[in-house]
Length: 341
Length: 271
Image 1 (spheres, each protein chain N blue to C red):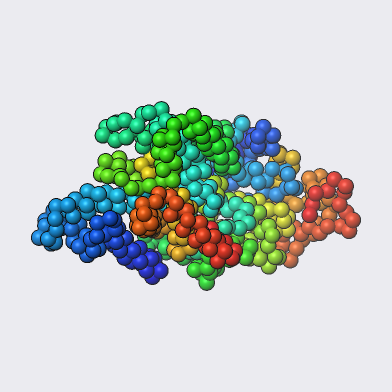
Image 2 (cartoon, rainbow over the protein chains, first blue to last red):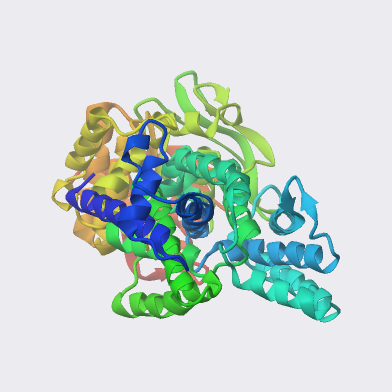
């Protein structure tokens, strides 16, 4: 840990606390960040004495509406950023993002099919849409992987091209289903496509929490392998990494992380691309530090984006991340001469 | 040919790429503490043999034995604890510091949950001191010159603390002074620490000067092997490299090859 790493860690934690306070205070009912924060702290078992005088409605707004939405944004952001970091190192290519494996297109197909075919009914207390999206995302990324195998190996170029092809195929099928659909369903699909954490509650948090936490933790166990994989497969092999097995595990983990995120919020662009880039520029490529930083930063960035989406009159968060993310990304690329991965 | 003391051996190895057979039944070995040079013209299979010795290439026949046991009975991690490889490294696109790069040599000795201990850092710094790159420790590998990167990669292999070191043309693309520096470094490592080295080289003079034994490959087979003075002869070079040369004794006592003016035959591949 260098001084720079500590500075970045402190900066991220401060941003996280600010995000929590502002997010809980943002919404149609006016509540100060301080009061919202105290309602949250007061809800912690044993700290009830710190709770401010607040109506039951205010408490419900903070704890049952805004808190799950915030936590969902943090989890989804963290998940997408970690998945993006893994993909970029895996492909040794800074252009890589979870969408390359067909995860987003697969989720899209699953969700579209569920909405259009009228499966949007109760399903373990949840809509079937996230479940269908999750299945679609995993199915397409598994197909991409299996079709890219050549004699026990998975050449990276083949994987990329297969991902593009299957992604296009899945998107085409989604469009086909869409074009046959009814207006009401279409609106639902479009909203889903743009990605949103609005109107989500504790059930969605519960659905993705195990995937995000367990997935990220297991990825972290592979941080040294990820460092070594950046040297290329051959050198990783010489340094004692069983390359094919490790790559399969990482691919499954990245797909799971991205699929879990996309399943509950729809497609949210740029987080998986921009956060790893930004963090790598700030603290370098060592995954033992980079991965936790991306986990935190991904959450913070999506949390802040959701505040903007909320203030802008409840627009889909995917519009915010792309609207702010794309120019910022261009600026980063422009600023960095001799781009170093 | 393959004796009891052999540490790493290829026995009747047949292998290649995509169905194209490059090595046709190659048998050779390196004894503990030996510094072996693999020489031969371009396309003779030197690098392929080296890669077969690392276990990365699937064999279509034959065996590679490490301490008398088939190499494929070891896990990747176990192999990396015994064999370090310095491949031809041309450049990197990610900005690890030289220290972090050399520390990666500790990978096969660390558990999944384990961080680097002070002892790992110590090993890495000793390796950097041996390779004379301690002043580069905090520089990003992306900013190193070819010679510096080669040294850093050798230091990483030293940090792996293996008995065996395999190198693929470690002096390719280097200036003449750097070429000698690298071979001096390897010779010292071999002499002082008793490490076994197998090194592919296209430079006959360097190989003859520093290696204890040379294995000459020609068209995927072992043509000759033995001490440099027995192997590096005008006849061998004429037959294997199709080049007409004069061989005398250099200032260090090793055979020295000089190309005759206009002495390269039309089929010659000697650079």
